[in-house]
Length: 192
Image (cartoon, rainbow, N blue to C red):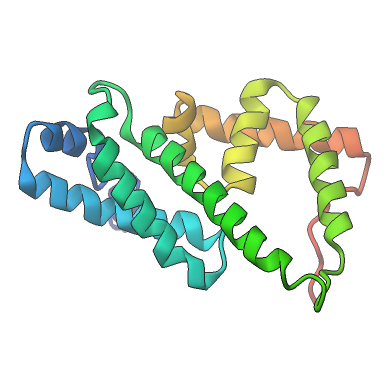
């Protein structure tokens, strides 16, 4: 019975798509690999932007990234990991989307001011200050996983750390943050 439970778990933990291999094959002219790479990238980008942008901007941001991937694919260096390269493109497009939507939304501020914006800014500044007290390896993975929504595997690829080390650094970093904030500062909410 135990073997039946562990087998599906092990299958879930195995990578299902070879990003790096698909990109190298794409650069060598493999059209099938390129099609698969674009399909997988579109799925990954939708998850990336779904956590960061309003729903109506997600598809445009995904398309912008896919176009950038297509036009900039020759700048990819084989032998280097693909996901951090794609993440960098996605971050640039995310910032561009925020800037564009911010300029458009600025016209509407006179009619409908956003309440609580100061709290968000103050919280972000405070969080940055707290993360500065941690080791860089801890603050980086906490930022990637807890704030930007990357998976453990994606954070491992982006930072060059192993997946177990990413988990350890998140755990130790969160413990350090709890000690900085004092007892009871980071407790889980209780639901009735």
